[in-house]
Amino acid sequence: MKHEEDKSKEELIGELGVQRSKIADLEKIKNRLEELEEEKDTLLGNLKERVKELNCLYDISKINEESNMPLEELFQKIVEKIPLGWKYPEIACARINMDGQEFKTINFRETKWKLDAPINYYKDNIGKLEVFYLEEMPELEEGPFLTAERKLILAIVEKLGHIIERKFLEQALKESEQKFRTVFNNASDAIFIHELDGNFIETNQIASDLLGYDKLELLNMAPSDIHPPEYVEMLNGMFEKLKKRSYYCFETEIVTKDYKPITVEICSKIIKLKKKTVVLSIVRDITEIKLTEEKMKRQLMKFSLEAGKVYLIKEAKSLFSIEVFNDLLKVGYSGYILTRSAKSEYNGQIKGKYNYLWISEKDKRSSLSPDFAVIEKYLEGLPRKSFVLIDRLDYLLFKNGFIKFLSFVHHLREIAYLRGITAIISADSELFSNVEMKLMEKETSDISPVEKEKLPGNMLEILTFVYNKNLIGVKPTFSDIGREINITRPTIGKRMSFLAMSNYLIVSISGRNKIVELTNKGRELFSV
Image 1 (spheres, one colour):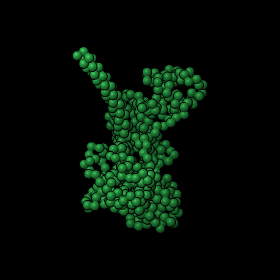
Image 2 (cartoon, one colour):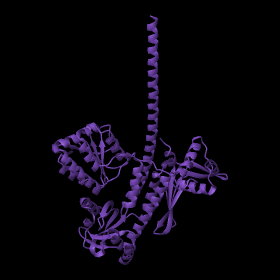
Image 3 (cartoon, one colour):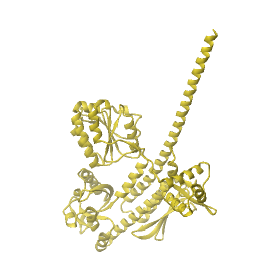
Image 4 (cartoon, helix red, strand yellow):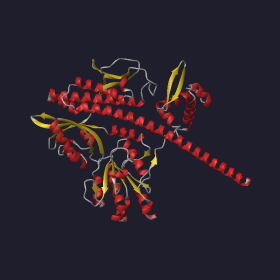
């Protein structure tokens, strides 16, 4: 009897140990979930700020589209929109000073919390944009302001400069043809004049420089000749809108003589020239701006993906591919899913709006034939910078066989490269032999997480010391860093200057000392 009681106690003790181990595991899971929740909140916060900034720039562009609006009214409308792009719009105010004129928000009041930037017309300074906070707010990266807000105010004043330039150009056109000719030939943007439905009848030198054609070549061409074929239908739609509104701005792509694509902003206006109705189009190269926007989007993503590539994900269920799909959706790309699965199967998994195409031989509104020629034609018509997930390959393989499927992957690579599309293929390895899978891998790329920026060891050593001090609430001085790392004062100055300019840390003055604190970018280097 006693033997049985001892045995029972041992079993209870053993079971207790198992339960304690489970509790410890659950505690670890709970802690990790909390960490992931914090990371999500940070990413959502950053995304929210970027969206506000982009909306601010978009609102300014929309105001600028309104035709025949006096410059004074235009600037007053713009200044009212500017505070909406800042982190604390409810306590922000703004003022534009230009050539002795002042435009400001209703709640405007000068305070010591200010961000400003000059407004330039060509190389001449003609004004200033100022944004103030009406109340003291927590210290961020530039006082109470974000570094991104510094970039935003610079983008706004650049846009204001372009608006002024365009308004001056319109005024010159009204005054006289001679003045028009002077501005036309000396403008910083490409200018085209063409018939409503015909060839160019005048271009400036910048237009030739931009496209690589000489003037005589351009005068034998039409707007459709400098656009990719897939953009011609959209271009015709833009001109129809122009006829109704007389003034219209839009973004598109044009192609140079050597087939190089350029992203441009075109602002077109219907004017009278020598008693003839024509279209005046001012074309600005915004390729660099778009690349910067693209870089900002990519910085918010978890995975490293490039436009123009085809990626292969080997999985039995489309879990990882949907995670990548959501990563692209959240930063604003247009997404398309080509699948045999019902749309309801993606409910709750995909976070955002996307285009669903059911692969089927049934001729329905949202269906696509499994014939690869049909699929390729559809993909060729997608907007540039879109991304597409091709799911449920079992049906496509059943209908076409592997040889045709591999040929489709070859064509998909070409389409993705030429159209700037990101393609993701979700493939169950069980559907393919080892040889078939290797052939697919040769034609596709792997997806990897975004790598954190790497710094030289001597720079990382400084940041590590500052990070550990900041954790306990201390902002070390330059002298503290020199003593800890054993480097000279001139060397400290050079390294700290580099780290501050790279936005890893903030240097401020406390009495006679310079003290240091990591920025969000600096702290991210030490996040798990």
